[in-house]
Length: 375
Image (cartoon, rainbow, N blue to C red):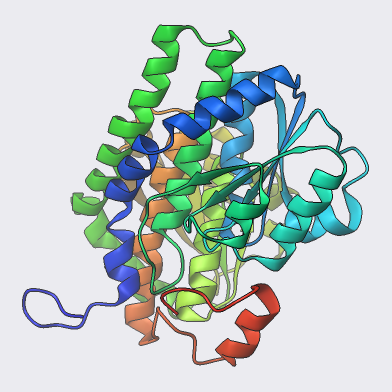
């Protein structure tokens, strides 16, 4: 596939820019399923929510959990599917809502986790981008995103799923009486209007042009460390995943406190530290940037635009996240990291759509029940 000038454009580059439309379409299609899930959760007196998946689908738990706790008032946690299967089923009960997330709907361990949770009486939901998938059929209710077929590593299906989960959190909060009608509509409007607009602003921002230079500087670095906390830990984890997938380079994702406690001791001039701070709670992230800069590391900070002028250390990329909830801000930061990963792949000359470092059929066979559409 090429651009208007006939220059080849990767599926990854094309699909990451489809995220605003994928989010809008997915939210518009989700209302009936949201209401059904919320009614059942209220009727069964759900008191705990688990967001279960692997890879990006697991990382979304860091976005969804604070949304469920803040908007719906229900304790929530993201758990890696294999961890739930092997070690975390003990407290799953009829009052637990287990949400399995898998864009393909074919992730082996996510399917197993949902099946085992159902046997313990849990109310199960599947968030998928494939309506006819095994997970959509196995879960009691399916939430189907409308991100379209993907031919590469996930971007649009990930952010669409996160937005749909946050919309579910708001709908459950409204059903439980925690959110009034006005607050509920405001939460949905942020997701359907403000979030896609902010992501579009990321793609057109002059600040994004500097990511090409940043990507070139990253190429010579020994380690890439992404630092994000709370909901933004999802952005750090997904960002690291995109470096793994598209450039075949190792990257580490940690939260700010853990960086200060231990990771910082091993950082030096050969390393790069990417700090993610899309919300106003950023004091620890400032300290990470300062600490890494003192050790000579390349420091790149993706920060809420209102904080950019006072951010003292390293390169600063302002994000249009002012006024957004922490979960929405994290998704905006995630899209900026998608852009950075795509630029980094260009610098290294790797194929962001297919790794040439592994036997892909073998690797996918370890993970999924059947071949993936688009692959």
